[in-house]
Image 1: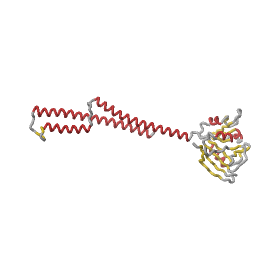
Image 2: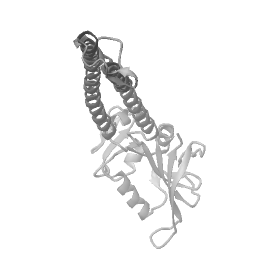
Image 3: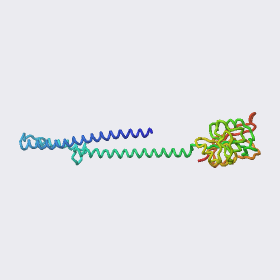
Image 4: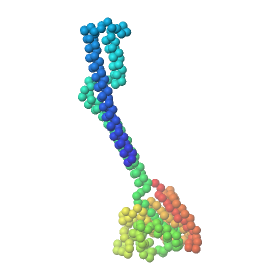
Length: 301
C-alpha cells in the first residue's frame, strides 16, 4: 500500500511538471516567433531608411553599410535564439499551443501506463505470494494427537495401558478450546465428555445420543462440524487415526519407550510424508513409569 501511494504521488508530480514544461516551451517558442517577426520588420525599416530615404548612406562598418552590419549581427543573434528554442516549422498560434499540450499529454499518458503496468505486476506478485503461503500454511491445521508405545500400541480392552501425568497435562493444554474428534469407543473409555472442548463422536449407530457430545457418522461430517476451528484435534481410536492420516496437517505424538500387548494400534508414520519438527525427551520418575518423548510432525508439502 505504501508503494502504491508513493507511485501515485509521483504521477501527480509528473503531471504538474509536464504542464509547467509545456507552458514554458510555448512561451519560449512564442518569444522566438516574435523575435523573428520583429527582425523582419526592423530589417525592412532599416533598409528603407538607408536606401530609400538615404540617411547617412556613407557610414560604413567593416566595409559594409551600417544597416547591413546591424542586420547581419541581428541575424546571428536570431539564429542563436532559434537553436536555443528548436523552432518548429508550424505557425505558433492557438492551434499550435493545443497541439503541443496534446503531444505532451500523450507522453504523460505513456508514463502513467508504464507505472500502472508496474503496479499491476507488483499486485499480481503479491497475490501469487499470498496464494502460495495459503497453500503451504493452510488456514485450518487438522491435528492428530496420540500417545503410542514403541510398537505403536494405543490401548487394550478400550483402556489406556499407562498413566503419564505430563502427557495428560499436555493433551489438555493443546486441545482446550478446540473440537476433539473421536470414535464411539474412545468416547466411552472416558468418564464423561471432555470439558472446555467440543466433543465430536463418530459412530455408525443412528440412535446414539450420549450427553455432552455432537454425534456424526463419518470423519468428513465431523470435519464439517469443525470447519470454523483453526485447529481441530483427532484423538482416536486406531481406525479414526488411520482415516485421518491422509488429511491431517500435523501429528502431536507422545512416544512411550516400551512395548505393550494391545488390541488397538497407531498407524505407522511414513517419514517420506511426515517431517519431525519438534522433539522433547522425558525420563521415568516417581510420577512416570516409562521414558517418553513429545514429538511433533508436519506433513511435507
